[in-house]
Length: 304
Image (cartoon, rainbow, N blue to C red):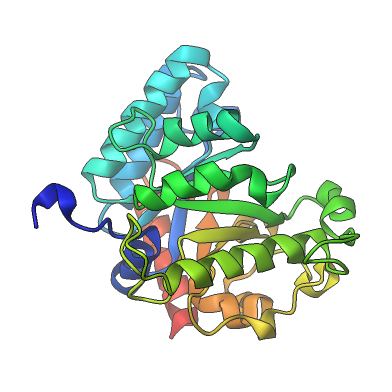
């Protein structure tokens, strides 16, 4: 078998390897205006680039995951995207898994074009996983999910987010179809779990290798500050195989406590990506390595 014909390693397998070797902490890269000011950097694309590359340098060797917030680069237009491309290149060079927090969502060829921009090998914006919104239905992202799987990439669909404005929609009950009677958040989670189970058990010559770890490549976003039961999600009924990864914002600055992780996520806890941004970044350029080291220890203590 030639190198080009080798099976693609799934994102789920790569994520599981990171968990085993580096733990579950993910450092956010969010160059807010106030953070750039505190870091004595200009509120420009150049400042955001310097900030992001410094965060990558501090994270490398300590964690396995970083999550750039695309909006804080996009606000600078084309120069911002150039800056982000350089941050992403540094992260790839450092061997970090990168989750692009872009929250893209559309249908048909438009959704596919977004996926091609972020999930195609060799793209200037290439990341390992991308956050997506399924407001037009999970099925509207079918081509994006197919592309991601073919390239060994992951996606995280918004399901139950930590902002209070989302509750009315995410807790609404689905009227009909296979998830009738479930909340919208639960329906997205169940759809994703079903896809992970099918992908994990596939033996049909698909482009991506079957899962070796039982951790799926399609994840969901579940906020750490939420009572997930109020969103119709029973965390004690999590699948025991082909688990769904969870991107968990809300720890640290937003009030989520790392020590509560097992209680918040129950059976999903082993697949949770603990995302921390401002609580780490506010340490400043001289103390960020120390802040990351401290958070790594906290998450490690919870994992046991």
